[in-house]
Length: 441
Image (cartoon, rainbow, N blue to C red; front, top):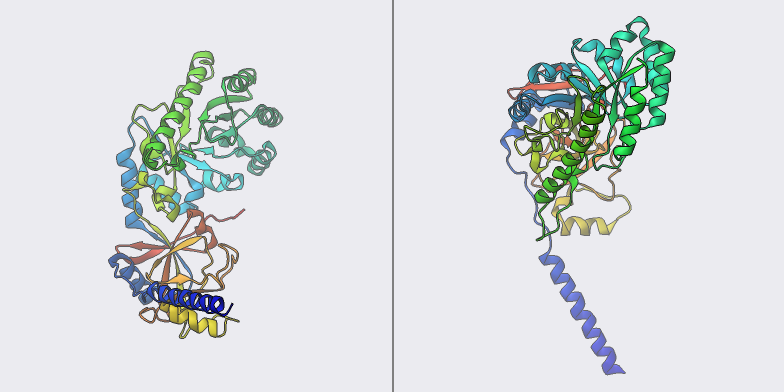
């Protein structure tokens, strides 16, 4: 028995020694910030000239470069439609329309429509990117008064099923309007719209019998699933699977267009809107694709979720900046006591705490490098929508000081709506401001 206890004790001691050795060997090295010419210069400009508050930034030079990349990609037969959800500023939209030559917008929120129509030229038309209830469309028309007929010429209402189409036809009859109706088709995303030839024929037949209350304007077939096609290791790379999914989607879209042109040619306008794409896939469309109306927005600002191989030529142009309010060394974590000191010893990158004004966004930290959120203190993204204190941990090698700015890349462009103003950067210098949409939800 004693021999067994001694053997067990030795085994435990050896195991403890091995664990300690492994812990020491795996101990992280202190990280120092890496030099980055672009971010270093931007952070220096903010410290020197920006107001000491939370900022949303757009780099106009990078925005111009992304717009140029889009213009170089699109062929004459392909129209560009700007997605306003990803570009939530009337001034930004106007700038992108002028620089790109686009004459189409995609809107997702009906209350934004009056502002979009007033802020853009009469030749700019607006396609709804999601179906909205006919009752909400009725509220929109009621707010316009005598401008309702002119607005109907510029808006394509998206309809996904027969019941919704009947609601829109009733609205048109009630208000004496002729509505432009774009039909949603399911090209593989499986979130609504005509799923097959039978459902499409039923929608088009109902439009044919609408007696002047509506006219068919085209299709919207969103390919949002394509860019997320998974690879299968050695069997197929992600790029190969994306191209396979894209080809299947495009073939499916073509089948819907064939039905419309062959069986309902009297409904198809001379210049139909065969809308598709999205920022993640617009570069995949060949010049002869049946889709002639390509929607994108995020590719112009490049939030962090747009870092995919199809947008390799685009560069991030939108950032969030938070000033540092406190540098605390050594960093403490509430209630940890001696374990906190052990944690700091084992990981020197937890030795210093930086508290920034704000944070908590759905965003990725990009500058300075070497910092990390604290997993014990971090709040879920967007839990705090008004500014609070957010903590970042770093090593004693971190050069960040009170008054410096931490830079983030938001995951979506609509994060700009959380700010009162959007600060512009041109040539690495602050260059004015824009405003986000004048109203929220």
